[in-house]
Structure formats: C-alpha cells, structure tokens
Amino acid sequence: MTIKAYLKPSCGWSNGVRAILRKYGLDFQDIDIIGNRANYAEMVQKSGQPLSPCVEIDGVMLADVSGEEVENYLLSNDLVKPTENAAGVATNAGCSDEEHAKMATKTIRFF
Image (cartoon, rainbow, N blue to C red):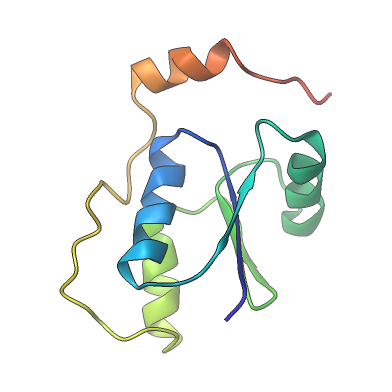
C-alpha cells in the first residue's frame, strides 16, 4: 500500500492521522504542507480543495479528513484488520488554541 499524507507539522487533525497510520503499522510519506509551498500546491491540485489533512492511499484521495475517518476508510475497504492497539492521541480533534497561536507565527502565505 502506498500512502501519502499531506499534513501540518503540528496540528490536532494531522497528529490524529499520523496516530492511526502508526496504530496499524503502515508505512507512509509524511508530507509537510506548511514548510514547503510545492507540497501544499500538490495537495490542492490532487484533492481539489485547500483544507488538510489529506491522505492519498493507493491513488485514492481522502480530502480534509480526521484520523477517525482514515481509520474507517482503511477498515471498511479491508486494507487493515481491526486491532486493539491504542492510537495514543485523539484521532478526531482539531488544534488547541496554543497550537493555532504557534502556527500563526509561522504561516506561509501561498496566495
């Protein structure tokens, strides 16, 4: 399985996606959309929208998803088997106010 995860370096939603992919022991490419303009542009072009996280699994783009939604996709398409492993973080939660404040000082404007 080939997985490209278009993620922010520090974000509740992005961390939830990472946690799910790790929960199932899946190899994935963690693509930084904040620090690299080309990565963000690629995500927008492939997903057709500007929101993240986006996860591409074997050519299928899951746009603006939570870790919970990624897990549901993987399980419902028999790409993984259920496991008792814990994700370790919330898989369906946004960024805290502190995370938003931190990102606001590092935001790169692409438009």
